[in-house]
Image (tube, rainbow, N blue to C red):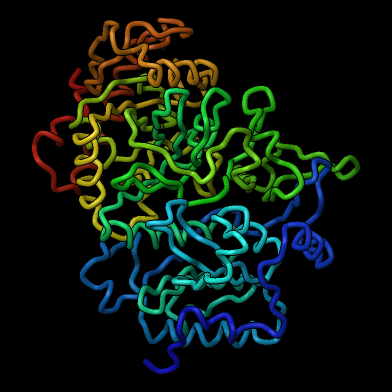
Length: 527
C-alpha cells in the first residue's frame, strides 16, 4: 500500500516543532500562552470546544479491509471507510500539521500489563495533550525508555474534511484503521473523541484474547470485592462508583480477564453539570490544578466555575488523573465482581429504583442498554423524553456483533456466580416534567444495600410491568418509593406509561437473534 508508514514512525513525519511528553505544569503554561483556555479559581484549566460539545457518532468510521471486513458489525454505528481515501486523508493531515507545533504523549491503555496497549497521541493543542495525559495510563520514566506505540491517534481539530472529496459525512471525521493501527480525528475540538476512539480499539482487540471489554465503572469495598456499574452517559457511572465508602478502580472503561477487572484508563472524565460538593465531594475535590474543565462557564471576575450553567452544553466535563481521587486504586485493578449494576435514568418514571435480575433478564437488559434522553439536552428533541437503547450500554464503541459481548458476560456471570441488578437513577411519581428525580442519597443507600448483601434475605415482590423482583424494604430508603406504581397519583396513568415503554423495549429487541429464554425475559406489561 503506497505511502504506508509504520505506526511507531508516524509522529516523526508530523509537525515543525514537537513537544514530547511534557509535564502537566508545562502543558498548562503553553495552553495559557497559546490562549487555548483559561485558569479557574480552583486551579483547573478551562477549555471550550466550540460547536462540537459532544461526540459525533455520524462522523465515525472504520476502514474496511482484510482485517475488518468479516469481523466488524457494519451498519449505522460502524460505518465502512475506503482504505485509499483514508491514505489520501492521512497525507492531507500530515501536510496540514507539517509546519505547526504538535504535542505528543506516549501512554498506555490498560492498567494490567498483560493486556495494556502502548499508544501515542499527537495533538495540535497543549490542552488536548494534557487531557490525554490525564485520561490514559502514564508510563514511568523507565517504561518510557522502551515504549513503542502499537496505536497512534492524530488529532487535527481545525482541519475539516470535504465530504464530496474525502468520503466523510461532514467536515468532522473520526476514522480508525486497524491495518495502519491509526486513528485520525479532525473537525472537532471535543476531547472525548480521543479517549473513546481508543476504547473502540480495545473493544475490537481484547475479545481475541478472551478479555471482556466493558463500558462500566468499577470500585472495591472493604471486603476487597469488586462491583461493576454499567450505564450510558448521565446515568451515574462516575458519581456512584466514586464513593467515599469504597475505593475507585475506574469510572468508565474496563476489561474483565482471567485475573479479574482492570481499568483501561489512568483518569476520570466526569460529567459536572450541577456538580455538588455536598453530594459528590470526591469529584469536587479532584478539580484542581492539573485537571481540565471542558465547556464549564467561569465567573468573569472571580473565575469560579458555575457548574449549574448549561448555556454551552449539558455535557460539561472534568478530566483529572486517578490519583486526584482519595484512596483510588493505582494501578486500577481488582478481582472478579460479585455484583453488577445496570444503571438507567428512566425519564418515563416507570422502572423501579432497584430490581434484582435473573440471568436471562440480565442478558435482555444488557443487550437493550436502555436509558432515556431528556427534553432540551439535545438539539431537535421535543418536549417529551425519548427512549435511548444503546446495545451493551455502549453501542457507539462496539465494533463486533453484540452477541460477542453478551456471550462473554453470560460466561463470566455463571463462572463467578455474579448477581445482576437494574438501578434506576431517573424519575418516579411521573415522567420528566411531572415526577421528580430519585434522590441521590436514596440511590446510594440502595447501592450500599446491594454491595453489603443486605438485600439477600428480605422479601421481594414481582413488579407486573417488566417482571422485575423488587425488594419490599431497603435500609435507609422509604418503602413507598421501591414500587414505582405507588409513587404515581394515578395507577391508571402509570399502567399506560408502563405499557407504552414495554412496547418500545419489545420493538427495539426484535433486531436480536437470541434464545427464547432471553427474549421471554423482557417486559410483561399486559394490562
